[in-house]
Image 1 (cartoon, rainbow, N blue to C red):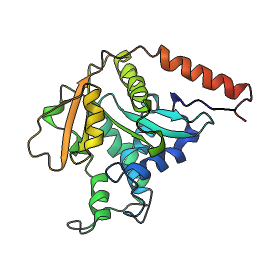
Image 2 (image 1 turned 120 degrees about the vertical axis):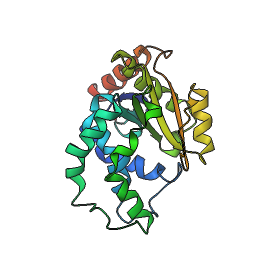
Image 3 (image 1 turned 135 degrees about the vertical axis):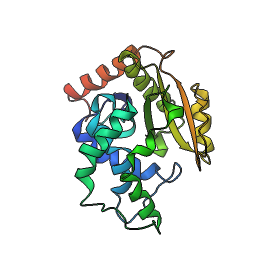
Image 4 (image 1 turned 90 degrees about the vertical axis):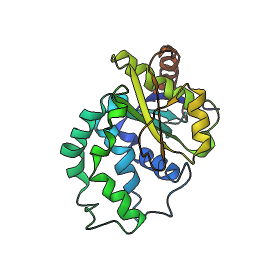
Length: 230
């Protein structure tokens, strides 16, 4: 039978798929497998801590068979997330990713060093946009409207929590991602010396209520319960 992809809340069983999606999109939107000897590094930075610390704000695109092929995740309060990252998440990964000594000399060392500087996420220019997010889709599922569906679910969840605005950072060179965010109404937030990054933000309002996504969840979950997933 034909399976219909739908957005649903994250489950602990999605952890491996979440990591795979992160790895396969972490090189400026492309596969980063060749860049890091330990494939767990990028997920430990940009995906797994959000699912661990804030599962209620983690949503996945289910391909219709129960497999996650995309995600959106983040936090409603960046300052609180940074504190939890240091106190709760970092001790879970220090054995696997020891802090580099001295100035980083390789890409792996540079990215590992970011693990130990979560405070980099707190910038005064972003105070009016306290939430932040990451969104990634495997290539076969891109440019089909699924990114908009994921973003809608995330923004709606933030809005229901009373959070008024959200930000994200992206590599300026990723022009395809920038076009996607522009279409969703994100605007540039000026940050001094942003390096290779561009910071974007928008309000959490003005998105469709979660009913459209909710019906998708119900349809997908009902199909699984009926054993029709094959």
